[in-house]
Amino acid sequence: MAARGGAGDIGKPERRSEPGVPGKRTAAQRIAEFVTGLRYDDLPEPVRQAAKLHALDTIGVAIAGAVLPGEAATARAALAVFAGMGGPPEASLIGRAERVAAAHAAYANAALAHALDFDDIHTDSRVHASACVVPAAFAVAERLGASGRDLVTALVAGTEVAVRIGMGGPIHFQQHGFHGTPVAGVFGAVASAAALLGLDPVAATRAFGVAGDAAGGTNAWIAEGTANKHLHAGWAAHNGILATDLAAHGAEGPPGVFEGRYGIYEALTGEADVDLSHVLDTMGTVWETPKQAYKAYPSCYWMHGSLAAARQLRDQLADQLDRIESVTAIVPTPAVTIVLEPRETRIRPLTPYAGKFSLQFSVAAMLLRGVIDLASYTAPSLADPRVLDLAARVDYTVSVAFDAGTQLYPGGLTVRLRDGREFTVEVPEPPGTELNPLTEDQLLGKFRANAGYGLAEAEVTELAEAIRNLEDPDAVPAVGRLLRRVRAR
Image 1: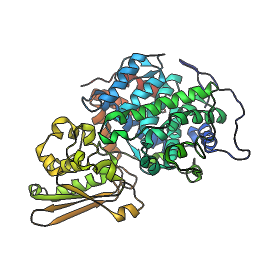
Image 2: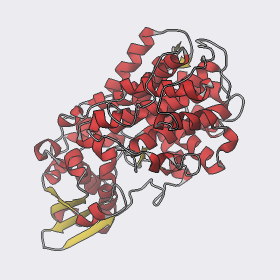
Image 3: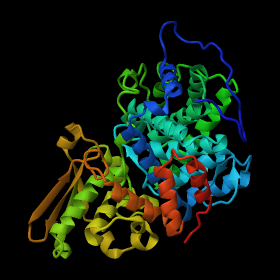
Image 4: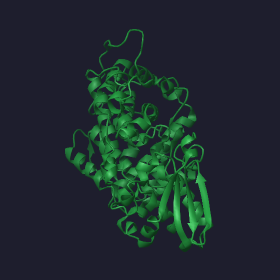
């Protein structure tokens, strides 16, 4: 894919030799060769379709984040800041008439995509790749006037890279206080930008090296449920574009940015000599893009198994809900610190975002109301005395079977009634995964509901058609035009 001219054109990168170990390619060099060599015709049709559906889902969530009051205020702060910063009119901001610099648009739109915790997740890497990659790829494609075919290719390149970097150390990042999404997402944004810009492998390797300086994002937000986590996807998208532009202009970046001493894995997790061959050897033969899980509920995915179990139990106990004595969630170990402890802040979440990370509150709401949607985490919902009373009676147990199993994000629930009877449901695969998929009609329904907060019905239909047929010549400009029309309805 050749670089294209246009506003903000940075030109073709210079070609130069790259330092490294003779006869051995680093992980960054291998990834750069994959990204710069990938072509639309290389992509199996299911992978292309998955890339477009995940873009559809991500954009729908971002539109809702741009216009719904309350919980997305932090992400909308990014929208206001980058609208004010302006720059060359390269790319669209959701809900703003003006176009701004591509990196600025990518930051704001990515923050909006991550703001409602309704965006997809790759379960093996635990990375929200689409929230980082989709806004970055669309922004660079708008800047360059790229074709839809090249944009689809860039979406796949970015997703495949982001999730593979995440697969190198998902638990280690988390255990050391880092959020894997911005750590890995910045490299996904680089991959998308490098593919669209037509960089050669040497320049792309430098871009990954430069991006290593921006790989981070702590989990300090967990303690009080603060919404700066929304900005993690924004930083990844923004910094990935900047790193790629810098490398295209000749900026140096270490080819050993991933492995060995001082690479990101040792720097962020203390794990030296990380071997990425198990994820890099499959690039171009095993595709991770279709394996991303869509979210059925706007909350942390660690709760979705238990929420699905709660929905089933509500159906079983519809006329006995007022007789519930206690509830026990069945969870894998990693869920404990993210959605269950400390207990005192989970049973009575103080903010909408804290509610999305409270299994106790969310399970109680599902049992009593039968639904978890965007309205479930508004201030009135958080103050519902019936839900809070039941949330205080939700406990948990860690499942040895869940910890030993091969499935990620399982969950379950045991409800005990006052007469002593107990009812248990376990859900090994939450809804939205490959093994428990949402139908295309369900995905379109989710998109229509989310996009409908900011667009008229006819515009929602037009936007869906443009994204689902992204290869059409007018599709990319149509998406940008419709995103600029978004307004609260």
